[in-house]
Length: 416
Image: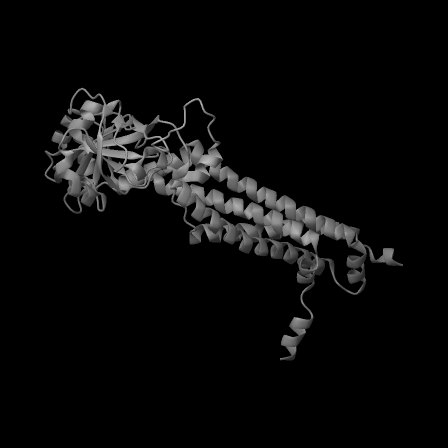
């Protein structure tokens, strides 16, 4: 019990320095908290890139994928002869081969408000204002790109819940020029006003929105439309159904690797054959490592940690310089330089730990706002929290160690 009272009445010197540092401590904690918040945001956006990199494939039901040899990523698949799917169906391990058509197309977005839309020549609000206003932001009639997926209505290659949405509206989709619109689209595409707006156009072809489906949107497309393969070929300007973009194969259980190997041997070189796992890994690698989007967020983490290190170093350095007599007194009292160095390191780590707690709270609020307003999946994962915590402790320790050089100027002889 005596030891407990001693611990309370004699808090560590590092904690005293932090608690009674006043503006100095406030500056260190504020600067580091801002930097750590930026780290969490950058990691959150990077995580969103990973999630949305595969969101299109996640909703598709397939084991093996056929694409063009010129395939780059889901939004740039290239063209594939439908004959390749027929050839693939010749293998005894292939249960079903389903074509999927995909292309960007222009969508006529409804104005807001519908009854009194703003004029095209009127000054438009800034990007931040539009983002904060969400679906309530005023906007003129405009055309924007979205992604169109066409498929055989009798063999929809989707998982639940999109499959249920298609089955519910399949009969109406058989009528030409009827489509389903992504319920999670950017507000500009008009899902919220579908019951009041009827002048939809896809590639300047009048269409009717007969229903919706839930699908996460990504960084490359703010909306997606589903339609029959016949509508797709006609509206998107394909010459015939004999040219598709994806071949989705279902195979017998346990034969994925065998099927991939056999298809690579038998199909012409104009086809790329990948297992589901391989194409998912390829998409993540493309968006995270090969595009400027993923690289930008990764660099942002490094820059934010550098800012945090500079802020804490400056505060600690000034603290040591202004309190050299006190540190000299401690040395005269028997405090060794390594012990004083430990105090500085612990003080720096304390700054970072307090800043980390504040950053988590701020980042959580920003995550929720971003997910609501932008429709981007922002997840405060344990992995990102652990990584940020480790970075905070490491930066605090390194910064404190770098400040130790200042202690060499504290000479007890100067006190006398």
